[in-house]
Image (cartoon, rainbow, N blue to C red; front, top):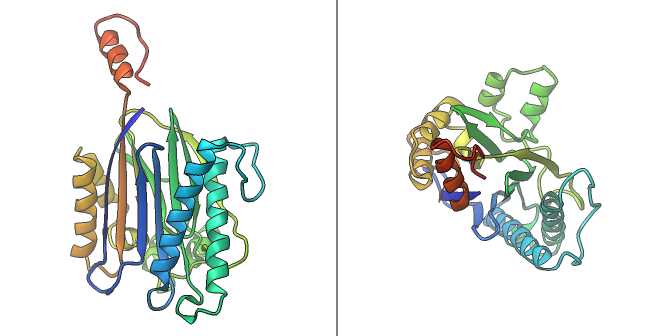
Length: 275
């Protein structure tokens, strides 16, 4: 499987600094996005720490499977998924210790995190907070993560409708974030992906401004992922740009050998679908 990625991060029209941070590691097919929180520049510090620690951990443990991992290895998930969880736990530990130290400039800092790793036809995802991962397939946009926020907990309990949650003044109250506690629960999942799928990672600066229907409309326009990422950020700003907005879009394609098999199938040869 090959992927083509586009990404953009923008401060928006209200904030004076960008507390979002992201990384795209093409060699690993790894996507990471964090949205920082905290006074002054603390959110920027937390989100940068989380991205750098998670990225470094994934690189090191991939090179050396015997390297130490943080937390319990969950046998129901692959090594790739457990690697994401371990790196996020390490990030949480580092941010919590820094935020609990004597430096008042980073006191109370934290961040959200969403990460996706694609290996063959399997995508591993991990997240904490209210940044999101979506899958766009066959014209349908599906949210793969559940927000760790007060309003979406009320949605799950039937107290609010999704529409009411989106409009609530409490929409930015997060129940789970990196740096808030010494340890953190990381939500994990795995799913099959294939050619034609698009994966979207985004901070809430996008989802609080742009409805899912409009996001789907942009993704369905079959733009280059970079053009689509740029357009989604522009839409968030056109609608007020009340927060930092960061978008990563990955479009999946068959490998070169997969394309050859696919062409042969069109000619009546082997019927294998591209890998």
